[in-house]
Image (cartoon, rainbow, N blue to C red; front, side, top):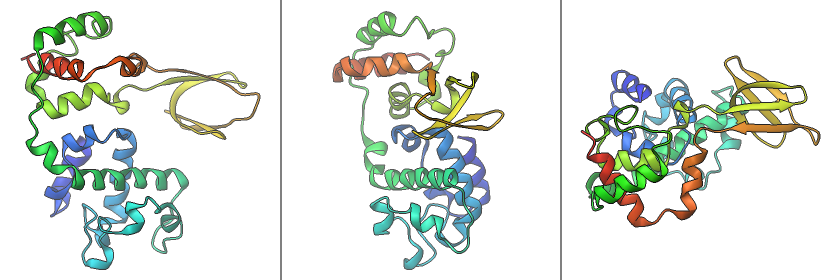
Length: 236
């Protein structure tokens, strides 16, 4: 991720920052990770360190019970040294979740061998379920050289939301745009940014290019996961 490369140049302890494998395996929104990481670097890292480990025990966020219990929103909103919006607080919470995930899953990401599947069976599964949208000579060409197996498996199981925007239509007022976020009260579009209040009369239609991935989840077996990963890893 470009954000991590920038931080690596700017911060002396950047080696402790989450790896690409941690980002892909965390199942967190990558756009929120990028925004939250940038906010953390500019507003928090001076006291809490670039990887949240603090400059002294009192500022170590990784060992903080509040962070581990995900009770940070109220503290961030009332922090004396930061004026943050609710979306910014949400993004920072995502970044903190990633830092914790990176610390507690590091061993598995570094040493686990996941290439135990049959690439021929993976190719058959790919042809039946994935080839309508993806091509081994097109968007997936050379995937086995670009990513290590752990990242590769994480990417196809948890596709990169930042690279695949969702289109949404809201009626009324009859507006179509790129979805940023949605909750029960508000829908936010991006490029350009616009907030649309929602009520009982609102009709929201979301077109998600990643929906075929999610439709696969209920019927995926462990063998399918390892077979497809082995097939993708063979695409050199």
